[in-house]
Amino acid sequence: MQGDSADVTGHYLHSAPGPAPGEVARAPFALPRRAAGLFVGCCTALVGFLYFLTVGTVLGPALLWPRTRRNALVVLTGGARRLTSWERWRRSFFFGDRFPARHIAGQRILRYLATRTYVGMLTSIVTGLLLFGVVLAGLLLGGVVRGTLSWQELLTQVLLGSVLLFLDVQGLFSLEAFDARLARECFGPSERELLQQRIDELATSRAAVLQAVDAERRRIERDLHDGVQQRLVALAVLLGRARRGRTPEQADALLLQAHKESQEVLTELREVAWRVYPTALDNLGLQEALGGVSERCSIPIRMDLGLTGMLPPSVETAAYFVVSEAVTNAAKHSTASAISVDVRQYPDLLVVQIEDNGVGGANAAGSGLNGLVSRVDALDGRLHVHSPSGGPTKIIAELPCA
Image (cartoon, rainbow, N blue to C red; front, top):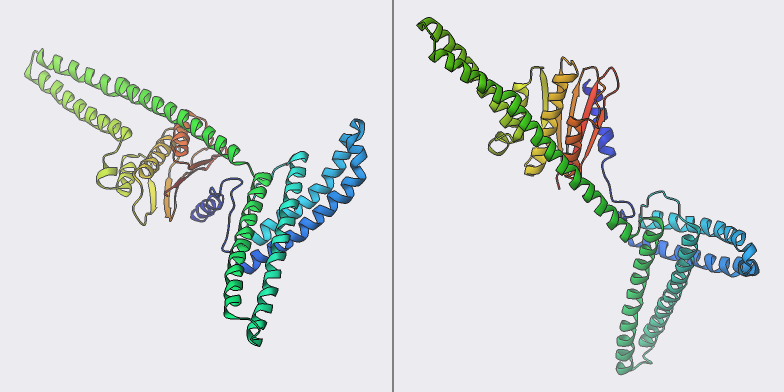
């Protein structure tokens, strides 16, 4: 079972959230490789220019006639899509860009390829000027060696060449940055789409957190009303009967019952307080708080905690409630005889796995686990529930620590 646990945890770690869609996942690529990508981009821009020049000229009359415009656009877009796939490969191979797989509309491809062709041709011109400057620098150096240049002419040429070199190199960097932005807007979601997606996620997370808080309040009220309050009423009844007892023996028996009832009230009140918020988290930390969960559970729990450093309070709280709720659900509904809890801390992630050998069938949309999903989502984490019919049930929470 330990091997299965490790496999499952590893699987979810590899599927942990990476860069947002459309973001550029850059590795430390060497400058020669990026320069090669820039040169290849000049070549593909020339191919794109020739494509628009030849195919656009041939399809020009069909594009102007409304009846054939649609079919002509399909043909023009088909070739542009292949050229665009080359550009996507070039950005991935030479610059390390990673983009999500998505369908791109034909007009968007044409706009990208046309703009990319213009930028590539402009990059070719700037690169040519840079090479021409290198040739002129060689000629200038040859004149210095032969002694045909005066110091005034040499100083003037060096100052002018330095300014032009700076402008040329700055132009290349600007064009490369613009090329990267073009690719990001074409192959990945635009900045506006990413911002709107983040706003929708935050709005959904906020609504889920509010629902979870209301559900938690209702559960606390139900626990107090159906549990603690009923026991206090029973305790008051026992004390009243003891006061009206006709014999000392009867009064002593009733007082003994009242004492036991008061102890049970204290135990249940302590359980309710732990479900609201465990003070051990603030005083002793996550490890001791999880130890308290193990002590209060009626099913044997095997704890394997790999905590290597301090955790943010919000992450500790979420991890505690994930374990507590999962263990409580297993004890109530799964008919399990053993539960294992595995907590592993990584540099920027805390992975919590709870597994039981019960009958399975846990529903992530249920009232208990739904609150955990909302709590984990509020931290930009993920909660995975794998509970086939017949068991076992595995609940894995990934909580970002950064």
